[in-house]
Length: 388
Figure 1 (spheres, rainbow, N blue to C red):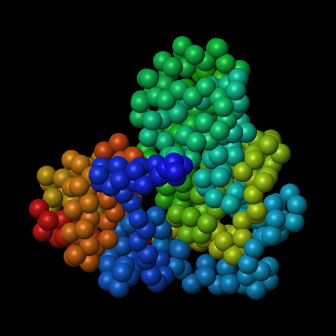
Figure 2: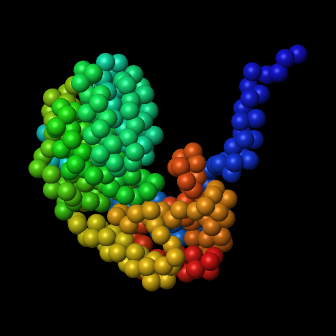
Figure 3: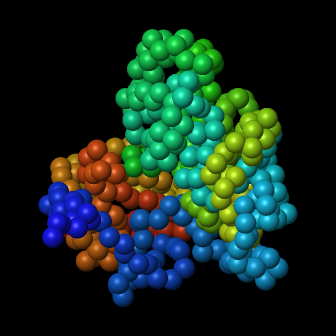
């Protein structure tokens, strides 16, 4: 009898194990915050994207609970059929106000927002320019569009310019896509230069503000506000699951672009609308981001304090970047990353090891939150010193 057509799966998993690339879930217990329980062990949590600490805030929980009582557990259909609620429209208006755009559209996840927006904006006769370190959702959105995709070296505006200079005139439309804060390095995209290049070469520009919204800018609007760009004509995509502390994604931009996406973005048209509870929680979080700057101020205080601790006590460690709450320490190979992560866990500190194929080189990824206390940051430094 012939081998099962699925036998290749176990062989592939063996290869993943040998390369130290194998991953599995680690269930955390309790409310999201700086202290969590991991396999019956209390740990300091440096693995969360809950940058402002809002995912465990009582007001978000109360808003979600009230929405559950009023609207039930699910939207029950796509937004264009039975799944649209007034909550969705209120949230979209709040996102547009935060992002200082004409309109916004809420998706059921940030991944779906990128897939849907990029697939709708570009097609087989078009060109997409993609930073090599972009998030998977940006890259897969580009593939889904069936456009010609050219990758440029990370943050290299000269390389981007050269590709546009050589290829732009061959294609009907052009779209530049980039993260604004890169999730696995913590560095910032050269957004002002990207905008200039887009305007020079008659190209659309889409940026993913997933790790910037709520964190950067005087009102928490993101990297566009951080660089004080005056209402540029670009498309901003983001998530409601990080600093905003809920679930879902959004696209914000000009009214005509948002109206177009309502009619052409497949991952919005054919997906059940965001749940009422997630929608209400996100709405409350955005209101807090705009009216309570102390959460963002405390986050940046923690970032600066940790940077100072790192420089004073671990001068031999060179982070990839020191520009955001994401601080990544590169390591020689996957085993070193796993060893350091496991050692820190024995010290009651949860810092994940990030390895290929997620990133080109192995590292541990430290994620700071506004709710971390000084003693939490000091304990992390002490644990790294003990590990040598």
